[in-house]
Image 1 (cartoon, rainbow, N blue to C red):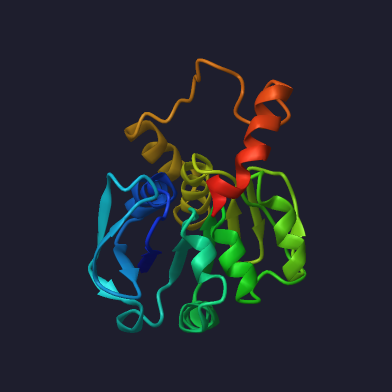
Image 2 (cartoon, rainbow, N blue to C red):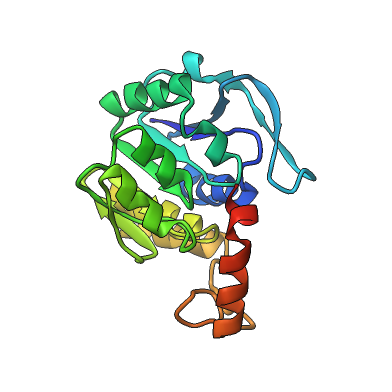
Length: 211
């Protein structure tokens, strides 16, 4: 089984690495990082780069597609070649997935029309523009489409899909191996829980965070 994790300039690192560390532990799977061009691509902070070993054209039919989010997603929303690759890959994929604003790219390609999906909470309402049904759930499965909310939820998405493919015990084993046992020092990880002034602050900055 081939897992293609898509990279692009200014992706969010954990959006790609979270699924890599969880879903990438699927028995017998080949995980490849792909992009429009091969070579290193820098994450949104500019301090970290991951390497795309293959171009999109070299991986036309992966079994699982993983599309991370990040500020660089905006530049791809009308990139015809990129959206065409998503449609082509999706036509034969077993699972098509996203993390954070990666779901906006799936939606822009027309893949989420009429389907329930999630995204980062600051971008959630944008899904409706493309005919998707936005939901604030952390991980949403609708048919073969699995979308995850903001950055850290990519780990949950990877474990969810791992369980669906390889069974609950294997997913639990991977969870234990990576010691994924969240005990955050603050209970402010969603707009429903965070102090209102912090929610307002991030909303006021959303144009700079997501673009």
